[in-house]
Image (cartoon, rainbow, N blue to C red; front, side, top):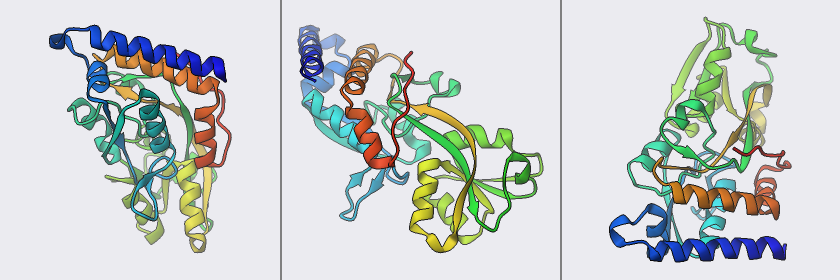
Length: 265
């Protein structure tokens, strides 16, 4: 533990010295974060257990905790930029946020527009539906209305495994998708396994079940493609906080399951 913390401190010291050594005209995002002592990170608060609003209306969840840990280790103030799932990447690219940390799964299409750090979490996409709806696999989605949240891994994976006569119904945020499932507007919906469990636990009368796993994927922090120094720091930070168990502890606290081994680029 001491070795890991010394390594993190050393990395921070080097980063800070480099940041202040650079001329103002060439200031990068990372240098600005260090100089201004503030980092802006996306916060999607309608996607349990990654991001929610607690009983006092404050952001909470595993990705919020990761963002807070990152800001703490940088020694800077955290500004959470609240976004919906479709707004995560646009907010980053428009400069409203410095880093996107909002259970952003790594895909080829997303990698064309943003630079991903090494993953710090994993999630499975499942099809959830009431107990009374007979679904055991992709073929059983035939003729059914399937709710999907836009700009999510669900949108990238579920339509591809659904039969041609399945009706995919898109929603702009996960809260709308959840409401559609609870109200019977759709027969089933695609969610992360954690979100599906959370919805089922909070609505026991609906007798919701996770019917089958569509795909298991990894999610990571993302930055703008030109932010090379910020990306290098994030990769170092993820490595060190993975080694000392910090990220696994955050994941397990909020999801209730252990974090599986994570790949690196």
